[in-house]
Image 1 (cartoon, helix red, strand yellow):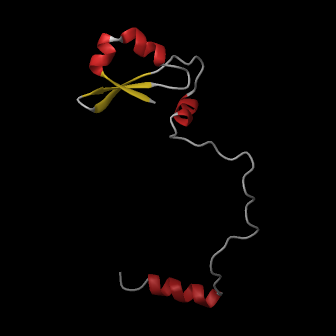
Image 2 (tube, one colour):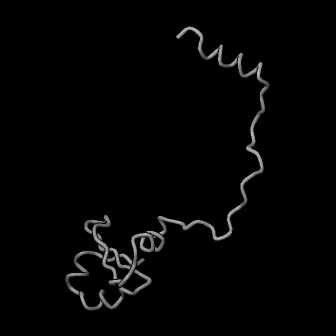
Image 3 (cartoon, one colour):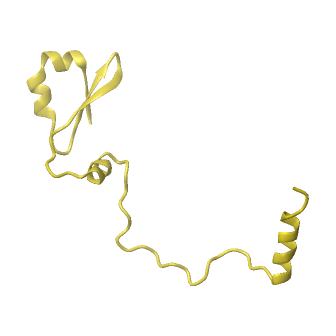
Amino acid sequence: MRMITKRELNQQTATVLDQVTDADDVVVTERGKPRWRVSAVRDGETALERLERDGQYTPPSADPAPWPDRPGGPTYTDAEVDALLDEMAGDH
């Protein structure tokens, strides 16, 4: 992504617009801070496609990892569960 100043855009508009492509935007700065983005019109581009192009969204994997047969974590006996519930219900 190319960065230019507001003055450069004002004085060389045609040159700056020639630098805008489907794959690359131009960011216009004012006093050294990014303020505006000049981008090409992308017909039919969805919001997700724009976010993906900007690097703000990653689509889910086409081949996700399978779910585990049983969830991980500790296993408790009935007596341990009862003791934990009694402890949680304590002095509130």
